[in-house]
Amino acid sequence: MKAFIIDRYSKNEPMRLGEVPEPALRDDEILIQVHAAGLNLLDSKIKSGELKRILPYRMPLVLGHDVAGVVTRVGPRVRQFKVGDEVYSRPRDHRIGAFAEFVAVNENDVAPKPGNITMEEAASLPLVSLTAWQALVERANLQAGQKIFIQAGSGGVGTFAIQLSKQIGATVATTTSSANVDLVKSLGADTVIDYKNEDFGKVLRNYDVVLHSQDAGALEKSLRVLKPGGTLISISGPPDPASATSIGAPWLVRLIVRLLSAGVRRRAKRRSLRYSFLFMRANGQQLREIGRLVEAGAVRPVIDRTFAFESANEALAYVESGRSKGKVVLKVK
Image 1: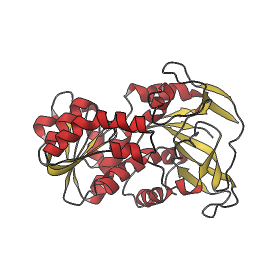
Image 2: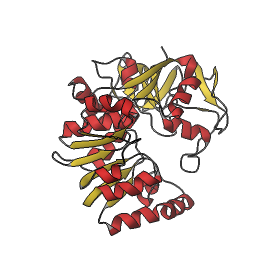
Image 3: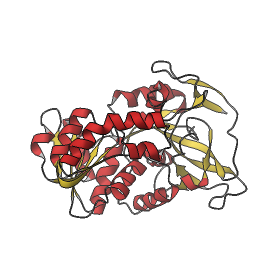
Image 4: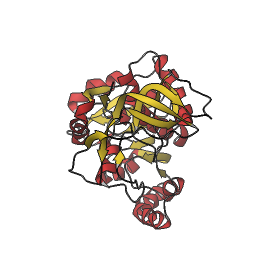
């Protein structure tokens, strides 16, 4: 099958389009013919080697954490799916590989594709929607009537997190550029801050939850946005000891993580705040819940651009540029 391959960690070396064998199917996996694949900054970080201490991969490697397609084969222990089913998924770590014609995925990481959206729209959802769900529903336990600040509201995670927060009944503030104000308002944002002209740290106060996805400066200001007892969940760092333990990181990595996050954890505790870092995980059951919201019209995919499969390197470069609004997707079939 055709696939985009990396042979070594490299920031500048492009992925190589080549032929690889179809993935070997384990007893509890399904083989998906890839119709569309979403791109994420996570793919770029793995490719560059930025995460190799935490998520080490054997080379050669096929990247790709978002897939939508059709089931073509099932393992003998599979019970939830059959050949011909349309599905979408975020394959679990160490079983990624959506930048290819076929990918093997554990059945517990898969859900039926929402019937009212295209394959490309479905492929845009898994990683960002699971990140938002696990941050806001699982970790923060966001409730109706609470206030949440979502950084980078026009990004992939931000566009979904705004919609999910509004569906829960929360009041939402977000940051974006002036060009994307109408977009985030259309998704439900109540307060929109143009980060080029305003400082959210001087505007926002007494928030219950912050979803942090930016740099260390934004992290520090976000602590001051929260009221006592509030929760800050980061998806951009620094990782905390609990997150390192959850992915089975080696003891040395856990020690490094403890040291890197000591400062922010100490400052959060001083303000009676809760800080946690989220390593999102594959979860087919949560994708089923998200699919029901999509089919009900409560949330919708937001796609910036769709690229042809052969243009995967160009698409990844576009994601890395930080200019995309919502998600970037490859049309594979």
